[in-house]
Image 1: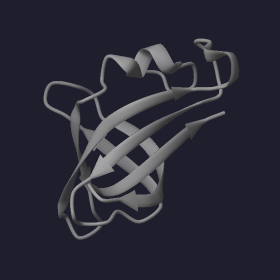
Image 2 (image 1 turned 45 degrees about the horizontal axis):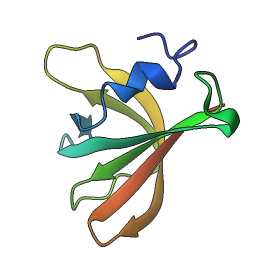
Image 3 (image 1 turned 120 degrees about the horizontal axis):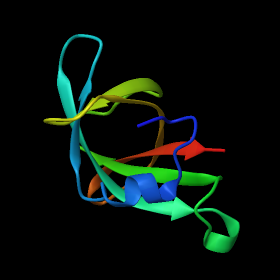
Image 4 (image 1 turned 60 degrees about the vertical axis):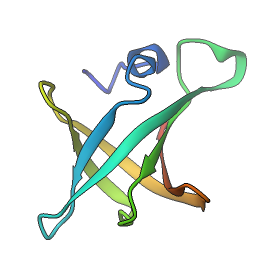
Amino acid sequence: MDLATAGPADFEALVGTSFRAGMPGGELVHVTLIAVERGPGGTDSRPFRLLFRGSTTRLPQGMVSLTRDGAEPIDLFLVPAIPDAEGPLYVAVFG
């Protein structure tokens, strides 16, 4: 996927998909794409954001390579969001 031209529709089919995110020490953290939020007007263009839910281990803010079986890695800048009762949340914004 070319992230320079990707739009929300490119990610909507991945909602519910679990990804592995590598930590600096080699530990793998699992995150799941839980939502694609379109910008004003709801068009298939930018801006939009991706919302991920993580496991109990918190990821630091920064570039993360997300991998899943049979697919190329997706490198995203993830920002921790305010966690809810179900666990840590992360946001990737496309402007």
